Length: 149
Image 1: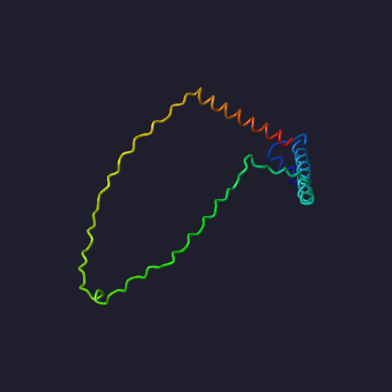
Image 2: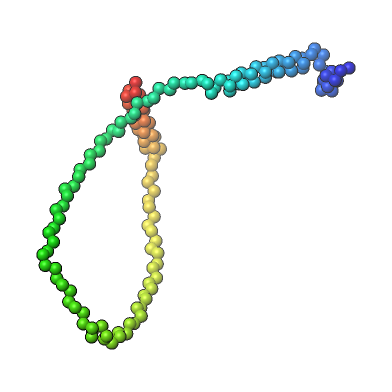
């Protein structure tokens, strides 16, 4: 007895050779799939696709810039007031006693915030809002399709 028949005998009795035929069929399918995959991986870098570029989308609004007028410079006064000379005797006056500033600390108590009322929306209002939003999206899609096509 050879080893293949011995291995099949331990797994079960294969009187008609169904197991060997299934193995051959599986290996043939696996070989086909792997060969196609390798062919695709080798050919993919050389495959050039020309993708048409979409036209640029122009903004719906236009913006304008308005410059403000340049202000006129004021003329300088002709006479400049001279500062008064500082007397030396005033510089040697008595030292002034400086008192420490008092620090006042106030405790701030947090004020409770009023609770915001939660808006109650019925199921019917939610359904209407969803339908309106869907209609807007559909209209925008149609407008975009008409603009492109």
